[in-house]
Image 1 (spheres, rainbow, N blue to C red):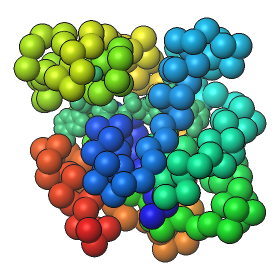
Image 2 (cartoon, rainbow, N blue to C red; image 1 turned 120 degrees about the vertical axis):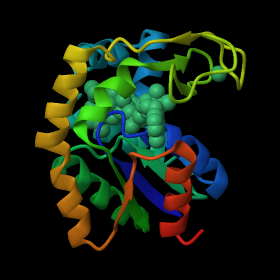
Image 3 (cartoon, protein in one colour; image 1 turned 180 degrees about the vertical axis):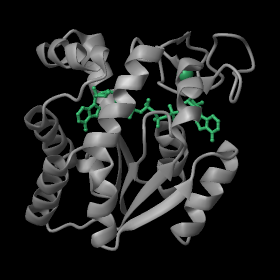
Image 4 (cartoon, helix red, strand yellow; image 1 turned 45 degrees about the horizontal axis):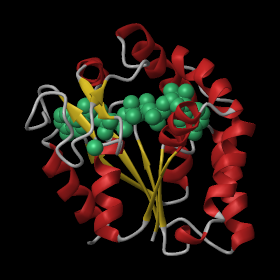
Length: 214
Ligand code: AP5
Ligand code: ZN
């Protein structure tokens, strides 16, 4: 199964994608996580991406498209994939369509998680992430058993540098102007499956599995 998961920053894409990819036995690919890994490794690409990410701006299409093309050609994507955070512009969506076509593959569905804007700032400023395995928590809505320690691997939890109120508001503006048009783009292709993300985390997962007939 080849899927996309879309939605505004803080909609719960990463939270759901992690469980969903495991449930469906497909490869989870997050462009945001790939950039954060490149920053941690100190690569040239990571250094460039950080400048955009810290402002809440999008990394240029040409960079992101190149990375995704490479990633989709790797062996672990043959069993199916779940793309989280890509595409984010119409140019990226068209490039994905073209890439899949040359690979003889197609998309099976686009999960669109919607959450009202006023809920998002609270979600993102309270988010904490594991430095080691990338698992995502929330100080109030999804707290770890022990403060600042990952339940899954015992790693240290940290706050993302783009999870402050000013940058979050810019990310939301960019989402509305550049990414929201993709909802129409995929609706026209009969691929869109929308889910209410303003519910308990487990309920959102249940709804996603239901719309995927799983
Ligand atoms: P990226 O890492 O993709 O960030 P994002 O899209 O802004 O999404 P988030 O990771 O902030 O949110 P999420 O929806 O995954 O929410 P989560 O599950 O963590 O991108 C970062 C940056 O990289 C971009 O700004 C851009 O610069 C660059 N980039 C990445 N991809 C790009 C691309 N394709 N093109 C160009 N640039 C790109 O949940 C959020 C919080 O809420 C957590 O604390 C969680 O515990 C909590 N939560 C989750 N679900 C619920 C629920 N149901 N109820 C209550 N709380 C919940
Ligand atoms: Zn961890």
